[in-house]
Image 1: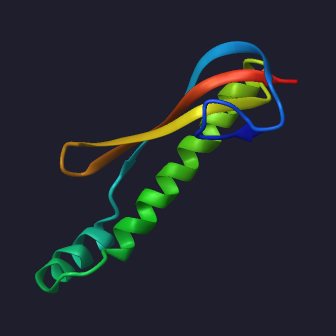
Image 2: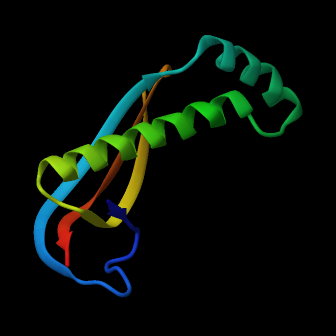
Length: 104
């Protein structure tokens, strides 16, 4: 599976476009990471626990994007993007989306 953020894949062509696909995950924030982040915010710096959680959410969203593309018969996703949003104070939604197609 080819997944790129560009609109095309150098050296190959998309022979057919299947359409938009996405992978979505909503995750609750880890209470330990939240607690540590509260203390860390007093002095500044990276909130590593929250960074790890966001990285995991992105990876899960991409895995679901890939599964959706494969289920649709695609072997490539172009113009892939990420988006995320906070839902309430304790939940984070992450989505990966793009255009599925068949690479020749």
